[in-house]
Length: 311
Image 1 (cartoon, rainbow, N blue to C red):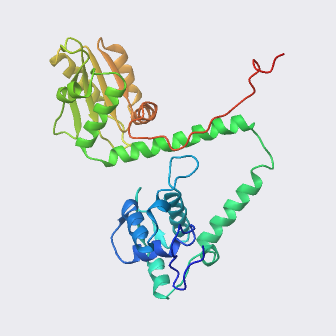
Image 2: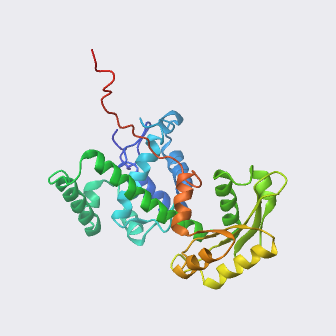
């Protein structure tokens, strides 16, 4: 589909290049950050895209074609420095982008973006990587898939820790409740929710009932600390001391940062059953138990069924 003379596509679903100018125009009308959801709605309304086209799904069934094209358009604009992504899920126009709009640009495509050095360098690197990738294969296709999966999960874990640390103590409390319930603690969300209560120290303290009568309980404490700052040993000692005050024999200490080796040495010597969950482990548990994450794509790897091919 070709854009109209002013660069605004007509009916139907625009290509990702045809979406670049409408995105920049929408962001250029405001100086504050704009959420991705709001941007999608505004661009959709301004281009008068048929509802059926907006709802059309990709073959994977996980995302709409419209959302996917918007994502690519935002990525290209960001690589050219026309917009910036200050935080996940938000974007805004840059001074460079506003200057381009002031020039009266009628359309934005890859050829235009190539004039910006940052974009040209990114495209050159991307092409070089794509060209070099199959030249000297070091892994089998199955090994490459496995290593890529691990790499993506490692990056996701880092994103999770950053996001969790940036949210409020109340959100952290709810997250811990959800995770413990998904892991089988508490016997149900309502029971766990009543047992767990936040205190005013930036963390979460409470008791999780393992059974309906509360005969078996787990004492929980959570500390939202900067990922680069370890949990002081005294905090772990105070937690273990608190178990005695609550007549609890089991405890879970969760943090967004890490525990020093002295903390693990101390826990190994006490009679209480205490589990320390650092930021990396927290992220791994959230991924494993589907808390705060969702499946993006599913690829099924097939192989020959040797039992079938017999005579």
